[in-house]
Structure formats: structure tokens, C-alpha cells
Image (cartoon, rainbow, N blue to C red):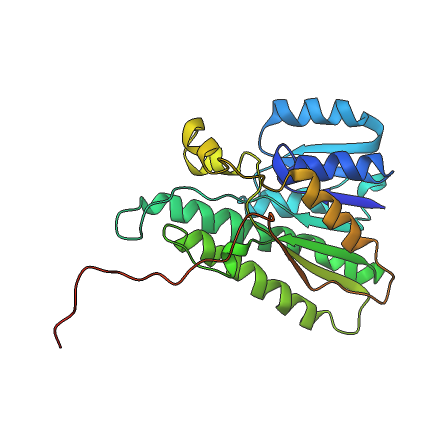
Length: 253
């Protein structure tokens, strides 16, 4: 089996690359950072993987890459749409709109481009699995999660739409929705401010990249007749968002 992983140079993507390689899968590693890709590729064994420097936001390059894969990596079995990010924690009325555009372009458009490029091959072979990485942020709103949460709600609905479109085929769709996880996620969100990023996980034990990779592996190794629609998982110490109440005084009617 051949597994294509986007965002393979860190976090969930790197954990998936390591676990799937260990289990004997061939991997296609997609990422923007060439040095990290090269290092990971060597670590996993050059003959077992194909490393490709690619920004999933580049529509033309995504389709060119998939259409021109080497023969021995062409028949993709599993697509893990992992590339994505949260950037910023500001309220909607002060945020830099470039942050919104980057999240939409990566989390939504990049995921859609890669899916559209890969899915015809899965249909042709009438087998395979697409795993999208959503988030609990797509289910529960929180202050500062505005567009990030919106992009992950899109991923959830898009995944359900894909399953509807693929009815009658043997291609599976799964949406994985993690809660707090200690990867580079918060470091990116806070623009490299390690102190703020570390504070997110203060006095609690978050999920790890390995936790998510093992969950994905479990979902794709179910029997042929079983489709895992979605999995929401959180650290034990993370709760659900509370109803927000603004206590600034009574409002005159």
C-alpha cells in the first residue's frame, strides 16, 4: 500500500510517516520544507518513500505532481490530508486578514486540490481511503477561533459530502477531529512565540502526534465493509467549550 501524507515534515504528518513506514507501507511525503523532508526521507529509508517539496496551496503544482508520480508510487492507496494550520488568536475585528486567507488557502483549498487530484485514481482502482484532519474547533467555537474553526467545519462537511458522492464505490472517507495536541501547532499559531505556545499545555497532558497517527492507522485497517465516518478525540483533561456570557451590565430595552 502507498500512503500520501501532506504536511509530513512535522506534527501529525511526521508521526504518520514514521508509523506507517514502520508498519511496512510505502509513503509519499509532501511538505514545504526541503531540509526537513530530506532528513525524514533518509530516516525512513529512501527506497520506501518518495519525498516531494510542495505547497498544497499551489493548485497547478498539486495536479502536476500527482499526474507525474513515478510508476512505482502512482497507485496511491491512502491520502492523509494533514497539511493545515491555525494562525493567530485575535478577535475577528482586529485580526490581520492575511492570516485568515492563509488558513482558508491551506486548510480548505489545499485539501480540496489534493483530494481532487488523487480521487480519480482511487475511483479507477475502486479502492482506497481518504483521511482528512479536522479538529474539535470545527464542532465547538471559542474566542479567537473564528476562521480556523470555520475551516475545520468545512473539512467535516466536505468529508461527509465526499462519502455521499462515493456511495457505491469501495473508497472510504474518514475525518479525524483532534483536540489539544502538543505539536508545532501552537508555535505556528503564536508566530513562533514559544512561551505562549508552551503555556497552552500548562499543567495538563495533551494528545501527541503518535496518538493521532495510531488512530488513523486503526481507521484505515478496519475490514473492507467498515467505514469510520469521523473520530473526535481529546485529552482527558480537556473539556467542552462553555457558553460565553458577557457580564457588562444590563441592556436597556
